[in-house]
Image (cartoon, rainbow, N blue to C red; front, side, top):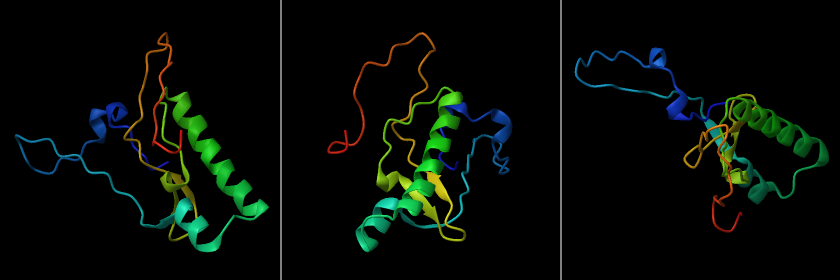
Length: 116
């Protein structure tokens, strides 16, 4: 999973870039040629086997972040990236993600208009 919810990144994961008064955080990620949305636009609907492989990866990513207490809130084809090297599926864009308290009831709507 290459989406990063910055609030849960531990201090030990910060890069010491040699700037004594500034904190510099870098997120390095492999190049992704396109998103699942781009693939659908270019090639049309995915075949059953391809769709199953992609969605299995998305569900695994969601299960992992949910286990970490993170709610993505903007899962859509444009936020599912396809790796350029091995066609791995990567969940991205954690800009709307939240990490609600365990006792907090999530009862609000959020996401990209038109995809909700």
